[in-house]
Image 1: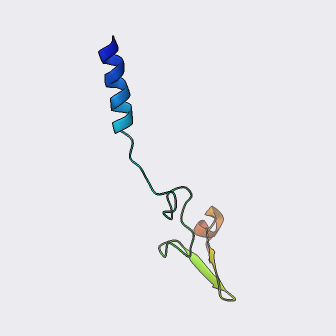
Image 2 (image 1 turned 180 degrees about the vertical axis):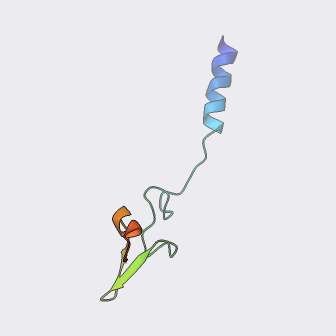
Image 3 (image 1 turned 45 degrees about the vertical axis):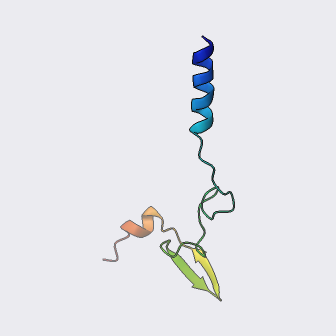
Length: 62
């Protein structure tokens, strides 16, 4: 029984990977300033993230 507990403890300690919390995008998603692949609008020198709605994507200008 003791070997099983020691094995479980060692396995749980060695299975964790240390990450730097200061890495952008690790704790919260990246912003438009950090990720150029996001859709963005530049208004008055400020980058804003643009998320089109379903109505905007399916609108027909017939």
